Image 1 (tube, protein in one colour):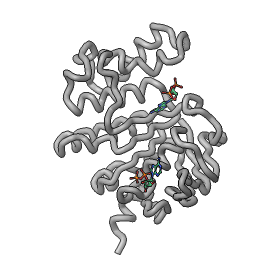
Image 2: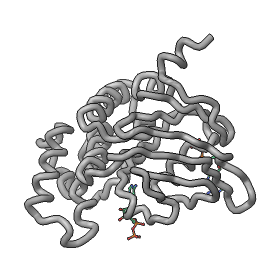
Image 3: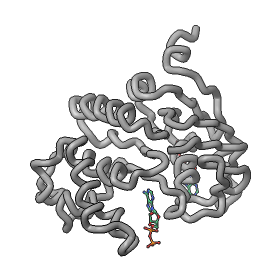
Length: 228
Ligand code: ADP
Ligand code: ADP
């Protein structure tokens, strides 16, 4: 677990377009931060710079006080959950969850992998589905497997990019509750991108509102709600 300090970060895409125009945001250790704003405002770009999937043009990113700008994704120890799950169709649920632990061969013993997968599947109530393939799961179950892959890493932070936008309204409500519960019980620093007002107002400790690559405000959901 760790704090995430975004210091005046800029993203310029190849053609000179500024997708992120100098955003600063301090996310505390264990905090659940929501990034919200209209499509195209730079939410995903900011998240992808934090995880290391996109280069930072200017500014500085610190995680746990350590500069991350030049670090490869694998050296940041973060776990990202995407909206399209990114599960491997040929692997079982068990192997999908274990996958991040097998990336670096020999780093984790089979016993360690087994115990971490069991802990994650307990938390996510996936025990009855461990031998199934993603094609045989519901949308909500697939989303849980994607979260399982984030949990097994014991990552410093979770990063969610609109994880629920492909689900129907009922499931979305269930998963929202589940994500909130998980985040509280793990107390892992979390950055969660959404354009959904309900998610923004119910999930996080604080909400960062973006517009056209700039940070408009950062406040608790209650403070935002009570604004005139
Ligand atoms: P959001 O997640 O808020 O919808 P994005 O971060 O995806 O916004 O995009 C922010 C802006 O950057 C948009 O105008 C988008 O078109 C642009 N953009 C995103 N990715 C690229 C890219 N690879 N090359 C050029 N422009 C991009
Ligand atoms: P490779 O370097 O073998 O091509 P990738 O580019 O897929 O592998 O990923 C490199 C490293 O980046 C992985 O070992 C993983 O730790 C990290 N990584 C990739 N995608 C994510 C993600 N969505 N969330 C967190 N870390 C990731």
